[in-house]
Image (cartoon, rainbow, N blue to C red; front, side):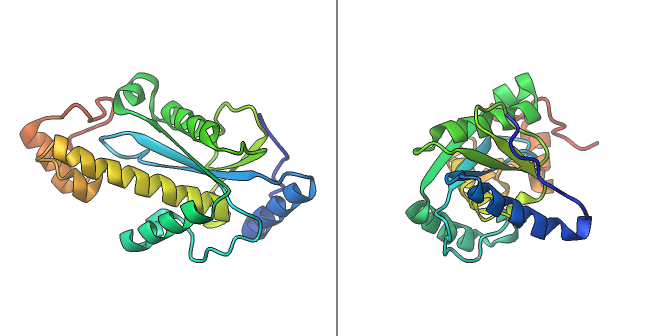
Length: 213
């Protein structure tokens, strides 16, 4: 369900307009605004994981941004702080077989919907990183580059990334030889060389291009 329209007028004003939009939502009475983001969309193996986070108003956690811009150590520190501070956190995941069946975009939307459904208390508005909206029953807005502009989306980015990283480290023990603990399933040279040597394992996404020519 679409919510209030984000009033983008000039590209150079985009960050300020996004932040003003969030303030306007609160003035309209929305108090449990969830930020949603995903991790693992571009990986060759493993699930796509989404997180939804409701932060308290005037949250004092500093240093949150797109998880890819943070060191692994800092991500884990913020992961713990977010869980301690957040009003609510939800996580959803969709595995590689379902990704192959319905495609990665639809799988990402499904993981986001799962994450939103997991939050207690339930959010009354959703701000979602990117340009697509999942099928959910509450008003929402897609925010391009939201993980660098909206604190709750940045928090969701961190929760999703750390959750997925831990899962891929565990899966490395089940499927040794691919170095999942290092690259977390992404298409690095080491990963592609392992696929060429060993073939794909049960958590590889067969609908993705697994080997370079």
